[in-house]
Structures are given as structure tokens and as C-alpha cells.
Length: 169
Image (cartoon, rainbow, N blue to C red):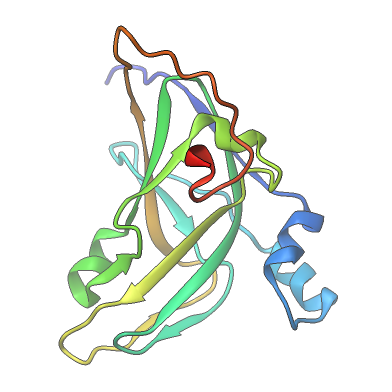
């Protein structure tokens, strides 16, 4: 088996950043969730995707949506992007969907004001009446690193400072 190019490192966001994702929750409870966050990992040496683990228990009835603060950020080399997808089994069994279809985490997101905190918004799109239950510390989405190129006449020089839609403001 060939040696893979290592292009990124997952980290937790700071506790001060993470607690901003919770409105009406006790700080000790948030700290307990924060302390139990697991960094994404590949399940096998042949896996392309890094499993992201839910920091909390989630129950979604058909049509319900939840926003998940993963507590994760990713430092990666330039010319790479982290693409996020639902874990295959959850998509197949429950039609679990990421609300933006595929999450795109650019390399410069790491330096944003929110520390590059990766959120996931998922919906149970079941048309069979199935309830999705995801226990804390269970994988719910997967991330794959992809190298990309740019056009010969590219002249982008903007600087990111945020998440959704921040590069077009």
C-alpha cells in the first residue's frame, strides 16, 4: 500500500468558542459535552472518509432538522478542501441529508473569527416514517479531503472572515 500524503489536522475549537453555540444550557453541561468531543477518524486504513461524531444525542422524526456544533476545526494545506457528506448507512437507511447537500470547508476557514468551527445541519428526509436516533460519540457524517486547482487567469485576493456566504459579501 502506498504512503498517503498528509494534508490536514483536526483540532477542537476553544471552549469559549464552542459555548457560543448553546443558548439556554448550563456551562457545566456544555463543558461536559465539550470534553467528550472526539476528533474525526478513519475507521479503516482503506477508508477515504473521516467520521465526524455527534457531540450530543439526537432524535429526528421525519422532516425534522437539527444544527450540530461539532466542536471541530481543520487546518489543511492550501489547494485542499474538506468535503462533508452524511455517513453512507444513515443516508441509505433514513435519507439523512446535509441541508447544503455537500459541506465545503475551505482551507482559509480555519482562520475565521469563529476559529473555523464546523457546523452540520442535518434533516431526516425519510419518506418511510423512520425516526433517526444518533447517540453522542456516534459517527453521523464523513469528510473527505480533495485537492483542487484554479484557472490560469484566477486573480482572487479576498480574505475570509466567517462561514456561510462570507466569501461573497
